[in-house]
Length: 389
Image (cartoon, rainbow, N blue to C red; front, side, top):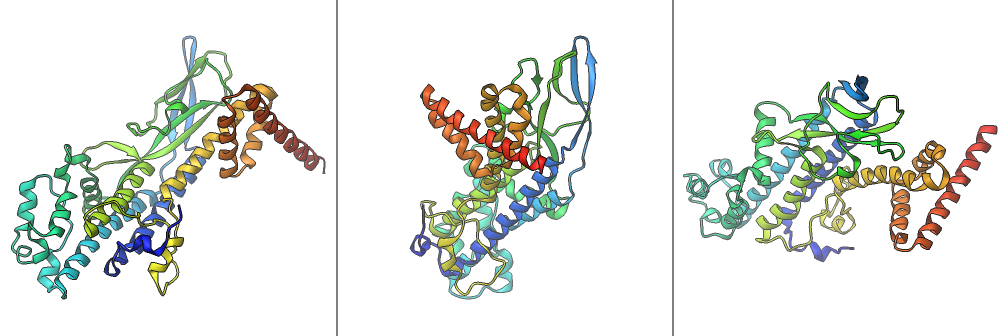
């Protein structure tokens, strides 16, 4: 859906700064996701074969170390998300006072993260804050801040503000975020019921525990003597500092970025979230005379969404190979994989969507698969000609 400058009228001029901060966050998340992709593309797991009776197991013997930049970039992104909240509260208080804050007043302005109503009331009643009109309990801004507090949720530890504060406190005082490789999926290169895997492709990328993988973990089991080639998909997980729970890094960053952008900032500024969401994808590498005029042309898909589309395309390539292999012969699996690898992400998702639309009719399904088989044969012909040349 296209937007106009009028759609962002809810964001006043004194809060335009947050647009650039959110764009910086999204660019940082993009770097994290691409670095995770590069790490996983190098096949970071080393395996050995272990015979156990009439079964053969694929066991992890080593895991390539994560680039040290990943946990630090995660910490940078989360710190800037928290800064976006702090800056928005500060700008709103100063705007409502219609004057500059004194040094003592400025030190008192922050975005609290309280786990009980009593703690929030105590925060408001602090000697440095209780004299500021915008932070009186009856003032709309104070009520908006209160609406975003972790105690508003049944489990405060699961509140995004609580998570954000815990991550950034750890990064500031103790260490960067804790990250580790995680097994995302194991999948046979061609359908084979003889292969048992610890993480089927069908369960990915559904939310899971996100537990990291360890040396000596068994990831696949097959009958002894069978040759079943399979592919391994890995990803990276983050550990929440206050609960120890692991979650997929891209999902965690997406959740917190979206909450700040689509919920917290609108509520602080307007009291509700029924507004046009601020765009995450904005070029801030060059200066703009009018930042507001750039908003309608900014990208609406977050870095995590864009990364998710790349993952969907990777999974779709496997799906296309599986669909076409029975039609063209199992010996064509390698050629089919090579053909699918030449397709852009949009192209492969388009083809898989075409197959899904045709699945209601055997004739339409046959026509769609036939058209793609013809594409593969054309690819084979070009490949054969280049080899001869």
